[in-house]
Each structure stands twice: as C-alpha cells, then as structure tokens.
Length: 327
Image (cartoon, rainbow, N blue to C red; front, side):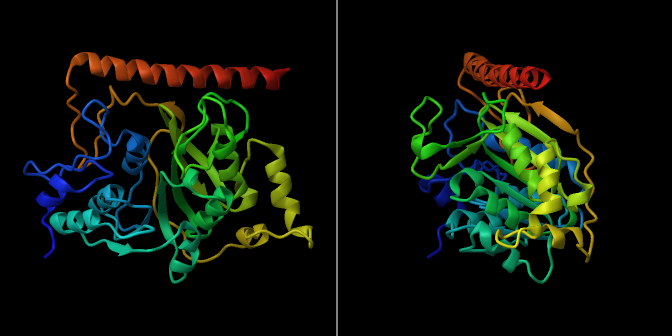
C-alpha cells in the first residue's frame, strides 16, 4: 500500500521543507533553528525573475521536487524533474499538489543532452549538483548543450567564499579548514572560477547571489562570439581551440557559433550583477516555502551574524583580488 503524504512527513527523511497547505509541512534537512531551504534562496530569486509561462524547464537533481513544483506553478508548460534515484517523497508531493511534472529517473547530468534530443530546454536548474560530480566542467557543457540559444541555466553550488581569484578546491585532498567532511563532495570553485566556467562553456553571466557558503549563478546560452568574457583567455579558447586537431573535448565551439533552431522566448527581469542574501532576514516569495519560526529571537541574530562572517570574508577576498589586478 502506498504511504500517504502525512505518513511520509512523519516517518520519511526529507531533503526539502515544503508547505503543502492545510498544515502539512515536510521537515526538510535542517532543524528548526536554520532557515528552511536557505541554500535555494538564490535559485528562488532567479525563478521569480524569469518569465516562465509556456517554458520548458528541467530541474536536475530534483530530490523532493521543490524547485520543480515552483517552476510548474509559475506557468512552465513542461517541467522535467530528473534524479539519480526515485524518491517516494517526490511522487507523494506531486500527487498532493496535482502538478503535471515529468519525473525521469535514473538520469545523470551528463545524460541531459541525449534526454532532450527532441527539443532543448528554455531553462535548466542545477541546484546542489556541481560539487558532487567528478567532472564539473563536463556537466556545464552538458547543461549548455541541453539549452536553446538564449536559454538560461541556474547553477547553485558550494563555493570558495574567501577566494577572490579563479581557484578550484579538490575537496578529497583539502586538509585545511575549508574541507568538507562528506564523501560525495569533490570540487568547490571560487566565484570567479565558476563564472569563468560559465563563459568558457557558452554562457553569458547575468547575475549571481551568495548565500553564506553557497552561490547561485544565472547564465544565458550565447554564441561564443557574443560573450564578453572577463578573461581574455576565454575568448582565445573560443576562437582557436577547434583548430587543434590533436585535442578534443566534448564541446565544439564552432558548432555553438553556428547554432540554429528554436530560440528561447523566456525573459529575465530581475536584478543583474552580484549580490548577497542574509537567510535570517530574507523572506522568499515563492510558493510552498515555509515561514521560518526560530525558537528565539537570538537564534535569528546568530544566523545573521554567521552570514555577515561569510559575506565579510567574500568582500575582503574580492577586494584583495581586485587590488592585485591593479598592480
């Protein structure tokens, strides 16, 4: 017998905290004293800024389905939710909300282009995925290949908040305090490295939002010649890489330049550039997001102070990197 949503809320481990209405709220992976789903706050802001009516949206690594549910409620014509393993919580939530979402498992991020061979997506959301994969650049390539020209990618990941230069941390060998004690965390980029990965693989960086030790970045799929990269070497690679007959990766810059086919009709009307959110003070304006009710007011202050520490370190690192460029 299939378990009811209420039974799953009471007994099952949930990744997302979801307000299904009528007092049915899944617990999520954080306790009461942490803002629910705070790692997705940047993603929420980008989804609010995108005009999704009629769009084809793919939510990669959907887990319990919160992002997919929000996208469908925002008017997306088709939402495809993928994951590496089936979750009963997703299926129960989709049924309770009566949302027509195409659930495809098991699908890896690298399989997206083949999965979407009939029609590319307008928007791909990849939250909490990039630091789990062995080859993050290949995943970014797959993401770009899955989008229509002009389409949008939202990538949310752990990042090196205290590094202003283009650096990647290989977590398994990181013996510093930066290291994360999880067996499924491999790579963490700095913001400039992540933006460079976007640009290299065929995206114009539109905006980024830092939330403590996490960052969400919004990129738009462009032809290489249309991308004004922050680093000159990216442009050099776009112009010259395909001339090296003895070096080939899974990306063809010449093919991206010749891109034809349907264009993405989605527009973005949100803020551009880089900004920071304080989870303890922010109120996400998306459906199904529970309100945060910490045990005491002091808990909220402690969370805000924690965010200030993260963001302060980021500001210092970025400032020092800029000063080095001037010299």
